[in-house]
Length: 237
Image (cartoon, rainbow, N blue to C red; front, top):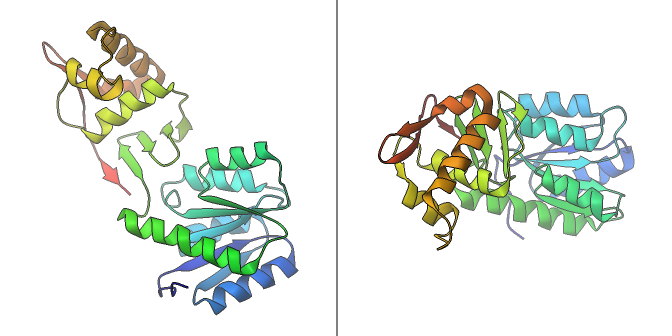
């Protein structure tokens, strides 16, 4: 088993004391520094204060559900990069899908093997470490693109984009400050399908600007060439 490093702090969130004790014991035995919380509110407070590497999060919490906690973690830039392992008695596929769509890194159902939980935690942290960054997030002004969750927010409000609109925005964001010709965008976003015309790029850019509201003004038209996303206050986390 891979040994934990000193920086690997885990936050366990569950309202069942027996479960918390079991999880904390096995994680601590594996070498992790472990904190715990029994409510969603306490979990968010601890996550912001301690910035753990990973949260083991139960879905069935009093007051604020685990789904709500996960959504709040992903919305806040200070906690968006924290990995999350969902731990729950719910086995229904829609619950698993919803959790993964909200940005969970893995999902484990109760009853569970403590050894499996420790191995999954280690695997998640290895993936985070090998990525070379805590989170896969681009922030350009008010626009935030979470590449891992395929999620876009503007000033904290989620923007619903089609897959093509998302890919277009992501391409412009990753190449921010550089002009992207229509032919380049067709090749990257549409895989250069022969029946796609450059006018399609213009139409999608216009729709994207509309959905981004005032932040859409960050997408500049470079006459005769293509488009460029301005890069004010760019951050990668």
